[in-house]
Length: 227
View (cartoon, rainbow, N blue to C red):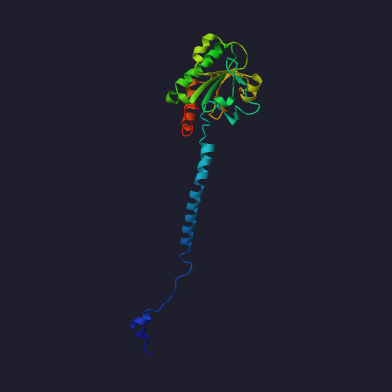
């Protein structure tokens, strides 16, 4: 047996383990890191929800950008009982004959007062300002009576549809805004023959043009000029 002072000089004895590290010594640090990671994951997952909440309740949405009123669902022209259309010579015109083009529609009696003339002029000008897209839009004047159309109006209507329509059936298809009449508005019909937008009475022509340009741009992948 070695003497007591030999233990300090024996390398093997100097390797003796006098204490072990505590098993829980690193737990607080690991716990903090775990919590931090969980918070980061939650923040990433919650970000879209928080953003939508802030955009709706804090940064108020601007609302619709269209000037016209969208008709939802759109109302098909040829839905039963369908429109009873005739040209100025009294020949029947099937509603399906108007399909395939965007239609900018006005409504007024055949006598066509000053307000009617302004509406027809606006209708023509709106089509012209569409540039190369104007050939995707047709003008339509629907006449819900039997009053004679003045010959002086006919030259400006040479490239438009001028059609008489049964008033009762027309009122089942188009509807005016509250407090207005059918002749107060311009109406937009899509190439499938569905009424899908009504422009306000005394509408801003610049804003109508913007609506038309947006719709024509959005539909250019499936809609072409001509029928």
